[in-house]
Image (cartoon, rainbow, N blue to C red; front, side):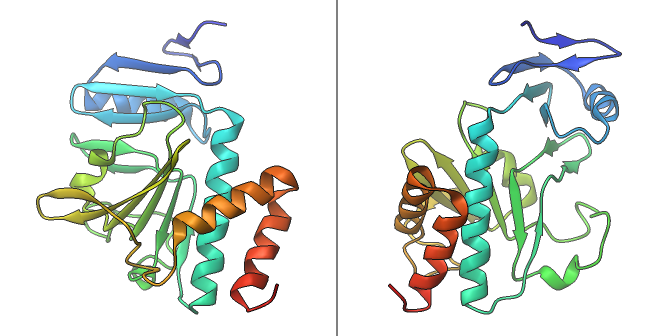
Length: 212
C-alpha cells in the first residue's frame, strides 16, 4: 500500500515516513485534517513537514517506558503530570508530537489544563521518544528547552540533558540520579518479552520495595 496525502485524506502504511517540503501554514492544514487522530504522527521543521506511521512496537515500548517512569516517580513520592498524545507547537518554529511527556518540577503549572500555551506555559521536564526509524531528532526539542529527553533505540536508552549550547548525552537522569534507568529498562523489557508488561511492572514495584 502506498502513502496517500491529499486535501481530503492522509494515509501512511505502518512503518512509513514521508518528508514533504512545506510551510507552517501547510503544517497547520495537515494538523486540522488529522483532527483527533494520533496516526500518522506529524512534525514540522522550518520548510519541512514529516509524517510517520508507527509500528505496533513503537507504542508498546513507549507505554512500558512511561510505566517505568511512573513507578520510579511514585517510589520517590514525586508529584507529576503526564501527557500522551500531545502536540507541541511554536508558530513558524517547530511542531512536534513526543511519544510521552512528564511534568515533574513544573507539574503545578499545568495541572487541570486542557490546553498548554507553548511559549507561555513551561515545557515538559521529561520527554520520551521511541526511535524505530530516523524520524526522531533530539534537536527538535531545542526551541522548547526541554530539560531532559529520553530516546529509546533498539540498542538501548540514550539520555540527553539540555545545556545552553545544546543537548549532551549523560549517564544518569537528573530526576532519578541514584537509579540506573537503563538497566531497569533492560530488565523490564526482558520480563515483558518473556511474559507480559503487567508482570514486568509488578516485579519492578516489588524490587524497589525491597522484595524478591
